[in-house]
Image (cartoon, rainbow, N blue to C red; front, side):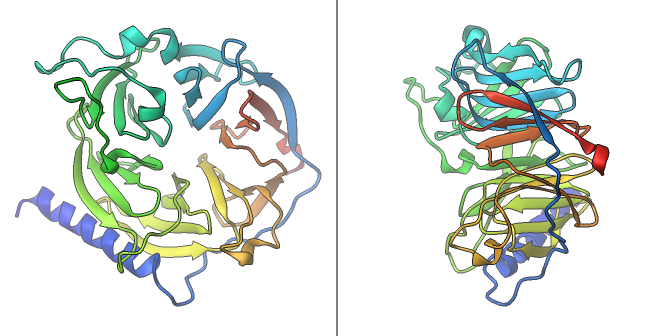
Amino acid sequence: MSSSERQLAVLLFSVMVLLQTGCTDRRQPKRFPVSIQRHEPEILSAIADVQFDGQQTITHQMLVVGNDLLMTGRPFGFAKWNIGANPENPHLTFAVSDQIDQFSPHEPIDNRPPLGSWVQDWYASGALGVFRHYAFLSGSAGMSVVDMSDTHTPREMRRYPPVRADGQVERDEAFVLRAIVPHPTQRLLYAFREQDFLEIFNVASLPAVSIQGKIPYGSDGQNVCCVDGAVIFDGMMVVAMRSRLWMFDVESNGGLSNARSYDRLQAVNITATSRFLYVQHKPNYASPQGSGNPEGIYVIDQSGRSVAFLNISPIKFAVSQDDSHLYANNNDTAVRIYRIQWTNY
């Protein structure tokens, strides 16, 4: 066995052990040391509502990478707004809807036929992840791999599954995802399906992607409900599981270890910066332990202490890397920009 094969074996074994003993363990789960408290006064100040091209703006996913806000949704498909120069007045860098002929299809790759028609619901209504200058968009049919190295002209480079020779679109469950998170140092992606399994994608040969392993969430064949998002925060993988938070240490070889959970936050949205973890809590019947905590967004520092409570319940949201602004889709009409006023903390 080669060194790379041994590394992969360690990765898959460690992930399989933690998931099969963690997500379905009937014993009292380990607690993530979160100290929840509500903070007053309100620290969010609404600045503006921004729409794409003056139209109703729906977002399926929102992700801040550096100085850019990436979004999937309607009517733009996949878009990037620059928020570095003026976070309260974003500048549109690109929108796939404005350049679909350049985005996809385009000239053959490796003597293969064109990729076929690109439909937002099929390829950009689920997960959104970024590794280097590539974006990974998942929808109801599969996943698109998009090269963003040309700042204003993104291009779809691969599609999983590929279009059939007769042009028909097929669906591959392996690429219908709820969260895509890159490993901090390795050429690996953690790809989460909604209820049944975690996949490990090898991205060493981009734009090609290969599945290196598929690990079921439940050892007894039962589905586990439900992944709504995942992020890396302070060296940990944090997964919003709707009924709770799951957290794992991320190993340098790609493995995940030390599984623990926190069931007093029913996490339906999650994002992170270098300083804070932002968890949107929505109490639900499946986990009554969280009913005592008000609905909203809890901001948690690296010690596990909540340092702020944001009294909003958006459909999707993202936060600038400097924690100064929050971008939210509250009602599938526009993106509302909030200033986060940290002067009291």
